[in-house]
Length: 111
Length: 115
Image (cartoon, rainbow over all chains, first blue to last red; front, side):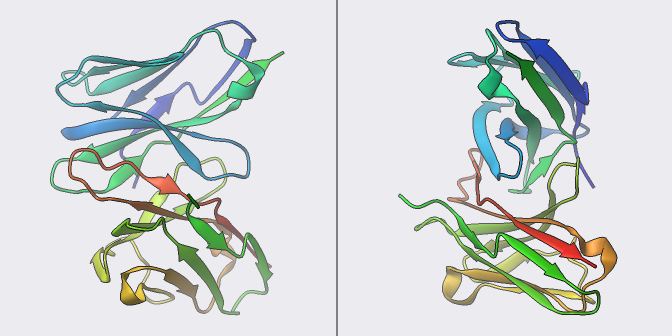
């Protein structure tokens, strides 16, 4: 079973625009991570935010975490065609040491 | 540094045939995972190893799936016999297993098509 759900399922934007993806999860977490998957490839880790953090930045990525709402968002600023991929949130549950992935958001950036 | 290596990348078999997938994790990564990914879905955990020990195999369909990780390094995942519904991508990942900062490195996956 999958722990998280991403919203929207698909997103199409013009190059240069910002893209925002949301993730909701069900139980208490140790940390939450975002991964990217290009078509036909494995997943690549983007960023990790711990349960006691509220916001984190990495280059053009900004992640927020609201543990009271059990939700996170990933913002990609100034998108590029190369950002076209599927994005997954993954929750690391307390005591589990497993990562549970959401359903993913398929992002298309139009040049 | 070589990443997580999986083989074969693609496999097409008839139903009821056996199939095996191989994974070589990143050197020094004690934790190894096998995930199943259906088209348009996120990865779903099948089994997790800590060194040689399978510490979580609750989602592995044990009637037809088996896995092993001899010597705590390479791992194989086997399906026997394969069914049509097993068509999916099988992803292997590894990590250092550091609690609270468990970042996974994935292989490219093995795409299975069962006819």
